[in-house]
Image (cartoon, rainbow, N blue to C red; front, side):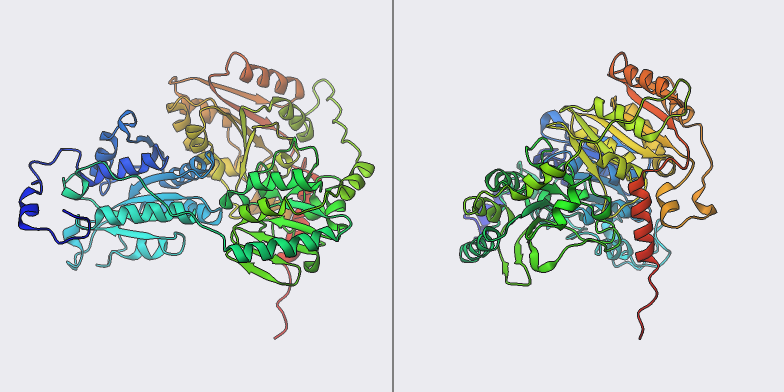
Length: 593
């Protein structure tokens, strides 16, 4: 039969019956193969009565046969955080989670919203109501008690780029494929609800291995591209001391290599916005650090803000990244390059221009200009190392991170939780190949525990080193048990300073103080004699050094949990400055009517 033709009687007779179809010709097997095909070989799950058959079908399609592995999590929020971390660990990667209807989906939705804000293709799969219940006016459990099954769907419409409700087999193949391909094209989460009675039923549309995806590549409009490059080159070539600043949307634009190519060609100093740390190699000869306004790497803001032209590739200017909207930048000096649009100064703007194409073409048109970097070299003074502690002196945070710096290598990956870890980890100099992730746009505390699980599950060649505050850890702590179950060798530094420090610096109050836990005792309870685990509670530099040596030496194959007890007032000066400015921005009185 020709594709697109009406089936003849002979074709209909030749169509396989359900009995004749192979056992694996089911919706569940098809979904497993599709997920594996796009790189989501681990699916983070929480069982519930609406998704149990689906989980059976997913698990039956083993990774060795082109299927997936199910990683059971403690709750749905953590499962979706893990899918977020999994997607981050691979360039253009995809993460997936599978939960039950409404009680599971609405638990996961906070993490899905975070993935949406960070442009991560996370596939959230929900086991939905029986297909016979749609339109029946029945009231189901796990709902809010009205005969309307669309509540969950309507919630997900705000935080996903595509939603598929699969309640019949005839179009299930098309709906699943469209959802997954849309996640890949848009680099955003999607929602797939699958009726609980459908995953194990064979159907002709699933009788063969799915045809591999072919996604039409996005292309630049060549006339616009040439005009944008010509205008930008003229703008930059006439400037005296231009600079380059990388932003977080370089990831979704897949333009990191093109950005480095441009940096190599032009001679400008190279900085990154805080949420782009890790996207630009910090061993680059003209890398000057993080541009974050008043809390920038020393000497970086002076160079960026005194430039007469700056190119920002993929920036996000929100209240956090702009330190309460206090950046000293001028629009007329800026070239803003977004994933598919270029704006030069106060105009003109060029649409349908892909960032990677623009940066690649611009690299061939710029004159070499090292003036701004020469200025940086003249004013730069290396940071001194903090003095070693006296014997028995309480551990200071700057001493902690002095030792962390020495731990890092190309086979490490750093995960920084929302809080003071944002600021301390920004100071780390990343060796070539070292990964780095944090969630700046959404800033959901507790994200890092699930993200550590997911990242480590995807990046087997990296040892993940996570920095988590005590307040954040209390939100999602239980997922450490899943790390132990799967034999991960992450190193978690729990920074115990007695509360929500980042909130204290924005607006203090008694609600920022939390109940102290015996954190190492909690992890030992999770361990319960199963798997490899090392814990340490450190209060001094001597104890810290011993714990790090144990983690890198005899316990290098174990999950290592190091509780670092520091004084509640031992806060980075950057956080203090940032907190005061963000607080001022939050406290602005209403505009006069």
